[in-house]
Structures are given as structure tokens and as C-alpha cells.
Length: 187
Image 1 (cartoon, rainbow, N blue to C red):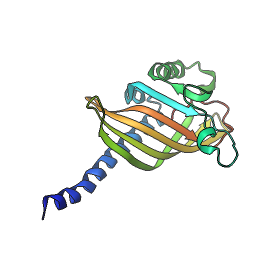
Image 2: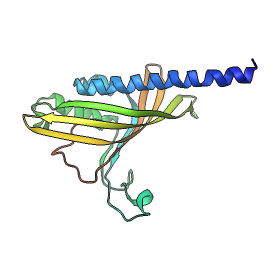
Image 3: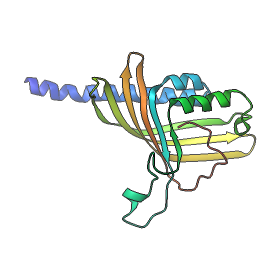
Image 4: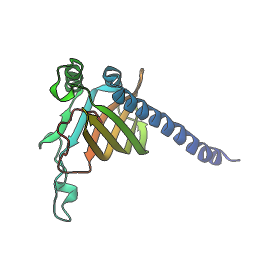
């Protein structure tokens, strides 16, 4: 067998191992949020995280690419946050006096179609992966309040001494009118 043939055969195994590692990372992250281990969840986020969820607009055919989603740093969005803001949201929930989270919501985050889109080393010699996935978030509060959110997520993870960390997350809800009474869950 030639060296090229060996490399070609080895590459899918490496990609499958990386994909499995990234999937496990995302599943652990979802478990932390669903089990209300918010501080553990925060530890999975990079100090320089950009956490962004645009608002969606109904636009004419042909205008989707440029106008359907609000723009990061320019337009109003559901989330345009960093680690400090996310940590403050966690602190507020954990006080027990957060009107929208007392009692705490029960959530289930389901992730599917996880794909590794790009894997490499950045200009700082840091290993990274860019991913996409689909999510379904079930949220139940009090007795009869049920909400469901479905969408897409695009993440950039970087490898640190402590393991993978989320450096960037873009969350795209597949609705333009938010049907939940409040948006306190994490994606």
C-alpha cells in the first residue's frame, strides 16, 4: 500500500474521531444547561466568546441572504453577548429571585445533524473547528407553560489546555416572531 493510500484511508477515521469528540462536547454542554449546572456550562465557553442570535425578518424572494437576519453589531438582535454578560445572566438566575425563572424552567436540548465544517489551526497556532447543527429546545414552566424552539446553530470551538471551548456561537431560530414569554434559556 502506498503512503498516499494509507493517508487517504486514515483521514476518515481521524474525522470520525473528531466528530465524535465534538458531538460529546455538545451533548455534555446540553446536559449542563438542562441539569441547571450553569457554572459548569460557563466553563465550556471561551473568555472571548461571541454569543449571537439575530432576529429574523420576512423578506421578499431574493433578499434572504442580505436582509432576513439582523446583523451582528449593527441591528437589534435577541442576543449579542460576551462571557461577562452570559455570566451575569447565570448569576441572576441562580439568585432565585429572577421573576422569569422562579420556579426554574425545565428544559431539554436536543441536537442533531452535527457536522464539522472546518478543522485547522488559526494564526495563533490554536486548533479550531467550525461546526453546524440543528436544535430543538423544549421548555416547560410552572404547570401549563410549554414552549418549543427549533433552529440552526453555527459554532467555532478552539482547543485550549482545558479542552475545547466555544469561541463563537450563532443561533438562528426558525421563526421570526418569538412565541415564548421570555428568553432565559441558553442554546
